[in-house]
Image 1 (cartoon, one colour):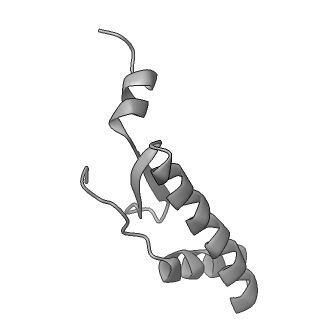
Image 2 (image 1 turned 120 degrees about the vertical axis):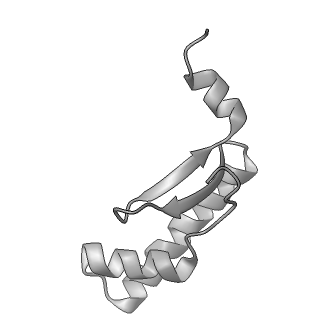
Length: 75
């Protein structure tokens, strides 16, 4: 999925938070907005290119090429 720019929407993050943390609607919305804001901020700063929920329901981040170069061992 290297070309994902955003596949976990605000509504899917809300649903996840309600399921995992037993949040009510208002709490889930507030937390999901903060999560989404942070994801967008990381994308704008060039740390990630996107995010998605994997097959296990975990929110995964797609690191940018610049970040991958810094964390990958030198060959």
